[in-house]
Amino acid sequence: MMSERELVAYHEAGHAVVAHALGLPVESVTIKPSPEDDTLGSSAISAGAARREAERMAYDYSAVWRSLVLTVAGPVAQALEASRKPFAGPSPRIDWNDAQFGMDLMDAVDSCLSLGYPGEDGTVDTTAVLYEAEAAACVLLRSRWGEVEDLAEHLLKAKTLSGDEVRAILNEPRE
Image (cartoon, rainbow, N blue to C red; front, side, top):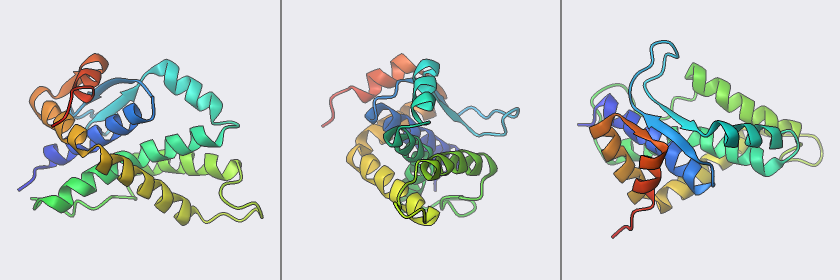
């Protein structure tokens, strides 16, 4: 049976692998709970890269899309791993109602909407945008699943990894 800690490791590994794949430098990844932020773990993207990405989001649809795919990557990785193994606890399905995830997701979707995505006629189907981002994250994660598993395994042992450790793990040759 999978533990909550294992699901959190896959969740955070998903964010980090997708950030790395999108060319965003990962500063750190942890599965240590943060009572202040009410999180079970976190993935930090380099502050400089995150700031540049946020500045681009004002006018660059591709930056907004990367942000949205990165936001859903953790829950998608968690759901992919949970679907492979029995889980001891509540349903491991993606919790689209989680408060922090919801705020991050709404910020990304609002940015998509402000740039007029996807409709030229001014109509936008936010559910379609979300499903497209989820599908894109799923494709990225499945194509790099060995990296997700390796990173999750290292996280379960170390609890926290620096950006250099993440890059070393993700750049290792795979069998």
